[in-house]
Image 1: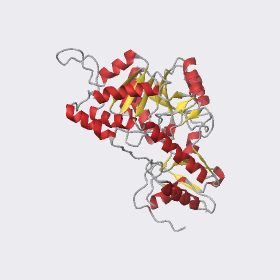
Image 2: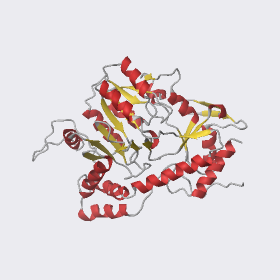
Image 3: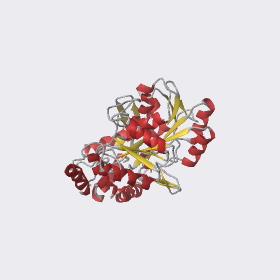
Image 4: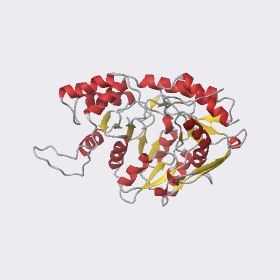
Length: 395
């Protein structure tokens, strides 16, 4: 099979626009509501709270700003330890540091690649006074929320749910983003739906929602003049960005359906390879945001990764993530490594991690895993070529 590079790049995950977004952006322009108040914001806050199943939603400039507001609501003190998912994007961890907290990273388990409840319980045995737990639903797959919620309740800990990647995913029929005291979703450009940027804090706590609305608009008090009694932040979402989100919300279920199709086409295409897809359990329905691959241990060629470079040795019948990613890039398709665990990042060299194993599971998944092109606009023909390219890596 003579495979030529794609003329048009096949992306990992890029925005998919439909047209209604322009209508609502134009509405913001026509009515002159171009700042951080307006009908688009009102509508998407109502839509998101109803869809996810929380009483209150506050539209903010990013998922990261929403996480920061969640940390502030949890009243994290300087020097206070906070348990956090280890295998995640840095945006999950950074707001802990914004508030002066000290992250303690919790290892993953293999059934979902998310926070390991056993490691979380071990962490509480080591640090019984920890008050805050930050859990992530990686790549759109829910964590084991029954166990994690139960552990948090047992130890009177506040649960912050980072559902930035999992909008529309359910655990036992309940939407992710509705399990914690404070929850966040993201509308970043590569997410399941996008505003180009933007995020949201969701909660059932009316006072918490009111506080976030105040803090995110520079903590201005109800006075005719500019009165400030608390530290404020410029975190509110623009009504124009909200217009994009409003148009995208109409297509959330359609996007999830297409992502699901991509995942299962990969799974069928790789059935004869020594690999597996990012897993989930029977009581979960992911949103399939990114399709990921894990190479079997005995099918890994030699690969060495350091902080900024890598090397590998090609072997017949074997491959490794970097060889596959190089191959995809050669043919103009974008894949990515799995999130490098937070405890392995140089910035976090002084912070602890907790695992029930000598080598953390998340390190193993990082070494053997990769994210596949998962763009909604990828055609079946393009995906078939990507499958063939990956097969060739194992020849």
